[in-house]
Image (cartoon, rainbow, N blue to C red; front, side):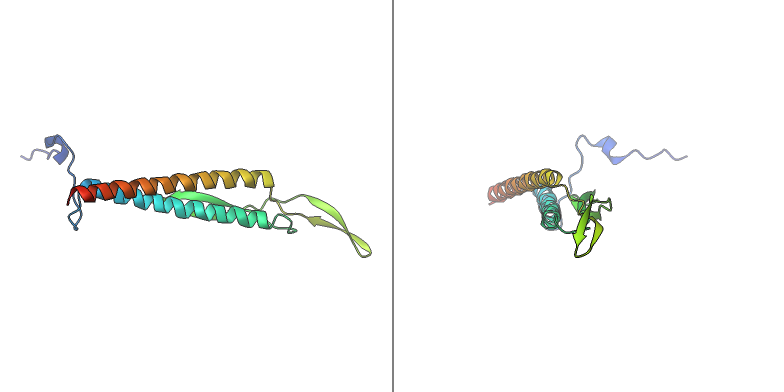
Length: 147
């Protein structure tokens, strides 16, 4: 008669920490993971800044539809920016052209909303940059200790 196997963690007081093939310590692998996540955030928020700048540049383009950046978490850590078009209609005005009047839809860009999005993206970019700097400094310290 079989006895059910107990999970390995039942016998261990601490979780197992596996080094990578390059014989890096667990702390080094964690720092590399943090750096990877920070780089992912930099790329994602950089893309958001780009999208907001594009929206602001087209605020006076008739019929322009603004875009939004959504972030999707990726399993390996970090985020992936996904750009989505906002198809809501902008305000319409009556415009005189030569001999007739025409209803024209303006862009759906709200400069106040874009300013808020720009500030949030910039602060998030700066936070990820600081995380990258800190991870780099800590990884450097860990490597110096091994010498």
